[in-house]
Amino acid sequence: TRQLLAFSRKQTIAPKVLALNVTIEGILKLLQRLIGENIDLAWMPVSNLWPVKVDPAQIDQILANLCVNARDAIAGVGKITIETGNVVFDEAYCARHVGYVPGDFVLLAVSDNGCGMDAETLSHLFEPFFTTKAMGKGTGLGLAIVYGIVKQNNGFVNVYSEPGHGTSFKIYLPRHREGAHSETEKPEPSAEASGNETILLVEDEPAILEMTTAMLEELGYSVLAARTPGEAVRLAGVRNGRIDLLMTDVVMPEMNGRDLAGKLQSLYPDIRLLFMSGYTADVIAHQGVLDPGVHFIQKPFAMNVMAAKIRAALENG
Picture 1: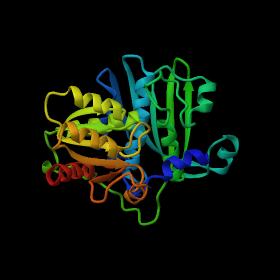
Picture 2: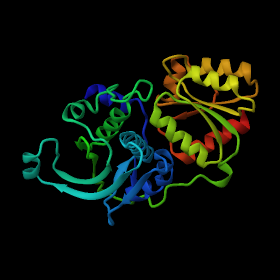
Picture 3: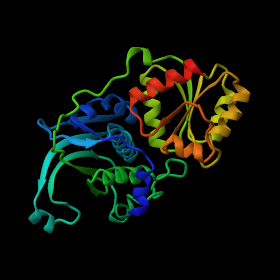
């Protein structure tokens, strides 16, 4: 568990009191784009949902990872269901059911009718780097990240799965009580924060790469998506048109973001740069991987924050 929590600790978070249904509704369109048109996305919110206090960008991250996971478990046509609910667990229930905690919780469930998992796979599910996917299809970090986020917010997660019948992830987040003013709207990116430039996006975590690509396309940008710095250099090398912006993770296994930027600037001298990381800008600068004064965005980020950072990088160099 200590190892898993380290995944969430490296991110600085900004928890807000949320009306979870509103936060989820703000991302449904992007999730549908992520999972593709062969898969139905069913949304089943409960009314009068209790508020929770969580960073909204972390809810986006949880849903992106679970939906990509569900999509990969569905061969072809299928269905993913997202639902919410209010749940109370008393001491007696928790005594009879392992893994439950007494109290008032808000349920966020993501279920699919895909291939399901056996008991052996389930027992390793939240371990970092554990994956049943083919080589090159994923790092196995996605579910460890989900687990880390839920634990960081004092919640817990249970998984139900049967081979051939699908899987259901049930996340329980504590009900927020004091002065519970709920966020009623997620800020949408303003019209001027969109654009039509070409962005080369480099991110080694597949779910984040897909989610960010969907967000950028939603804003009107053309996206070249790369999982590794090597792939980014290859894409840039064969491209005929312009590349206006390199948006890259800073810390990657093969080459860091600054070195990648140097290589791409030799091909595209006018390319603008936006660096991103789960670490804070101070930590990154201290490690000497970023020069002072560069454009930087910290993960996880909301769409409107990303939209504004991209415009700043494109317009101010």
